[in-house]
Amino acid sequence: MRLRTSFAQRVFRVALLIGCVALAGCGAATAPTAASGAGPSWDPCAEIPDAMISRIGLDPASERRDIAIAPGPKWAGCGWSGASTALRIFAADRESARDVREAPGAHDFADVTVAGRAGVRYRPDYADATVDCGLAFTTAAGGQIRLRLDVRPDPVTAAPACDLLTRTAEVLVPVLP
Image (cartoon, rainbow, N blue to C red; front, side, top):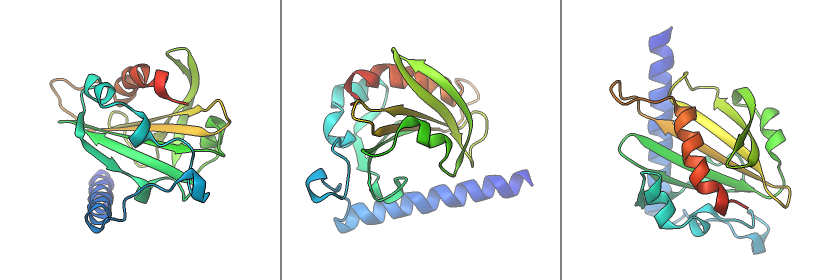
């Protein structure tokens, strides 16, 4: 059964990658704007400085809009990659961090405080113990910011994904709404 799960994870990730590349190649990967009512008022691609992305060990040039795999149509998303990690940040105006507990596709919830900000840590349903982790924070306006870190395990330097995501979030929390 473990091989089937691992194969399914790989197929899912390849499909997501192909979808993101296809959208970027077709010019359809622009984020919805708050003025159109189709997306949130905060855009992670526009609001997170390249210097912060570099500071957390990711390549600012790898930035990509992740609206195709955002949790829903009222979300904006952005992602960056490094040698062994990929970070995705999603924003929505009308959901709070508590809502992540009721959303499908997540488990293993824990209340956390990161850089003085209360949030909810969770694992995507398809993740194993060290590969992927998520954090959700409620915005000052009552919306939600989700950070998700996907980690390619390296047996020599591997740290659990949630530890890496917590360190990443400590850098980013000051610019989150």
